[in-house]
Length: 184
Length: 54
Image 1 (tube, rainbow over the protein chains, first blue to last red):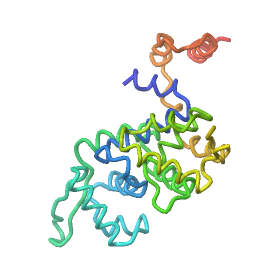
Image 2 (cartoon, one colour; image 1 turned 90 degrees about the vertical axis):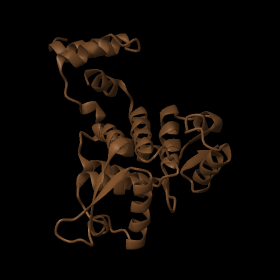
Image 3 (cartoon, rainbow over the protein chains, first blue to last red; image 1 turned 45 degrees about the horizontal axis):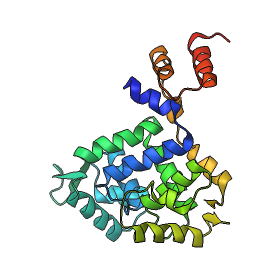
């Protein structure tokens, strides 16, 4: 615990951002292609354990079909568990579960356990990335580049998650196209 | 060389992470001194913060 606190105290803003994103990727089945919106749903469920899909839709203003899809994904990857509601048999109560809970808690440490602040960070990050559906991979590219100030493309890609290089390159190029990254 | 276009925006964004505000305890500060990447200036600052001398 003390070692972890010391580690956080010694890290830069960019490193912290990288750690937060790494923990979120881990919480979401080690899938860097997970969207920031999916991460926000996971954080929302953790903030409201036992919530329902309707609750998530209302709080995050996300369409029913999108929430359905994301909940199905989270369940299939073992990130959440669902149980029957005692009040209404048609309703499922949802909670963050297992490895996802452990990794999400590690990410939450950087926000002192404050879910609202984590949500604000993810919202701001989504806006910053200027993508239709920004992913944790996009976020890691920016956090890594921020940490390195300016760096060759390959050096940034080396900091990613050892996925297909074509996917990493495409994500990087998209950020250049959108003007998030300057390539002078 | 690629770099972030809106560096000021990135500063503000990453400034939202509050990890540095973790509970300051003597144990915490001292444990930091034993890390091999502590520079003399950082070490001095940590000692100042821990023992309130400057």
